[in-house]
Image (tube, rainbow, N blue to C red; front, side, top):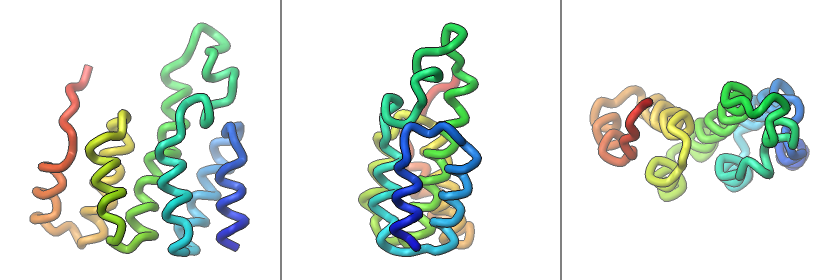
Length: 137
């Protein structure tokens, strides 16, 4: 089952956001350890791999709002990476927190880590230290 879900996750570019969201949810439900590298790879996909050409090239001069829908999928994959790995693979989590260019993905990772530790305030403090600060605006 996990292999089928991994294959479905990498049917790219993503043309049906809802379908990919469901695939990610199923990966979380199955919670197979082999899913970790697939989730990590999805988190780090470049726009050229993730977005359909009409979104990348902007049918109407580009639309940041449309691109955000695809970023939500990457944020969900980051959350599931924490969930599926059951707290292991901290190196992968740190890399997301330090290096991922999208704040939504980093915040989703923080949220998943805090949730995985039962909202432990010490974990929240440690994650704040790890997360890259990004100015809004």
